[in-house]
Length: 381
Ligand SMILES: Cc1cc2nc3c(=O)[nH]c(=O)nc-3n(C[C@H](O)[C@H](O)[C@H](O)COP(=O)(O)OP(=O)(O)OC[C@H]3O[C@@H](n4cnc5c(N)ncnc54)[C@H](O)[C@@H]3O)c2cc1C
Image (cartoon, rainbow, N blue to C red; front, side, top):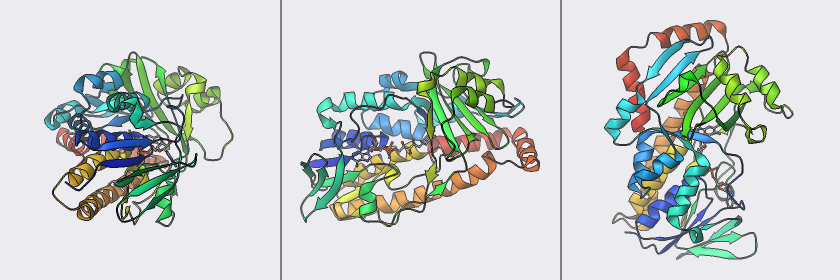
């Protein structure tokens, strides 16, 4: 194993939490520096595919915690704008072959559980990193309060606006999506959301997804109804703009506490050129801000964490271990970003002829193909 006693992690999102978990299980001391003072008040969720859940389990996230952070997806059902079931992916069946469930997860719940495993002292809230410095033997994160945190390695998990990435890369060429996404978590039930069912609606230039996260709550997202740069749009207007889609969409928006509705500007980019500067390495969105239409950003951050620590605990010297991680993950995440861009064209198509053909094809997809699609997602292959 590369000689590592202590590692400093910049950013406490899913990537920072996962790599801390992985290093801890390898016996390395870690410290996470998170700029915000607490977990943000508004909750959102994401789908975590089986391969990434299996990674979390192997990194020491106990199985009994899964039920506290989300619910298993057994089938992902895709409905048309008119409310017809177009296809249903057998996610549970293929996830079982991976050895872990695919799940809709409450993002904040996941972070809280990981911090509980790590112990509160490891996760430093309100600790903003303003720069990184290094010499031959160590690297250090310079903090906004004037102090510094030193270790053998700094792992930058500071997300899409990473200052660490930008200190040794040209700024990424972000592709901005043509609409903002609104999302939230709400107490909600609907006949389409029987246990194990995640429902998506693919309309004309509009797309929504809703999945159970436990205790009568769902996480949802909705794209295509808010233009970037539009001034604040209230809940009633969001509900109004959901009309014409199946009623589940307007109903879930209406069921959400207005203050809990989150609007996000969506930007993504191909993986950056340099993931590493000697003892500083990038992970998660800092390295690859993936298109949300691939639905793999958080899963990829977890996979990065597992593969980085696999390399660091191999018998390779530090330089080779880091280079191998970068090479493997850069290739993979480039493929994912390309797929996300292709997906966006299909999922957000507006032209009525194109959506009619798309829906016709989706409705006739053979079971074998549905299993193949679900397998690709659940295995991350
Ligand atoms: C609408 C939407 C839906 C999505 N759905 C899915 C999905 O279904 N499945 C999936 O796998 N992915 C999904 N994603 C992608 C996923 O959310 C991200 O890829 C993932 O959160 C990236 O994790 P991260 O830890 O790299 O970055 P982040 O989650 O952004 O975390 C970065 C952290 O670093 C902190 N930070 C930033 N700068 C500093 C600093 N200078 N000092 C200290 N701390 C700092 C931030 O406060 C933050 O806590 C979705 C994304 C969006 C926008």
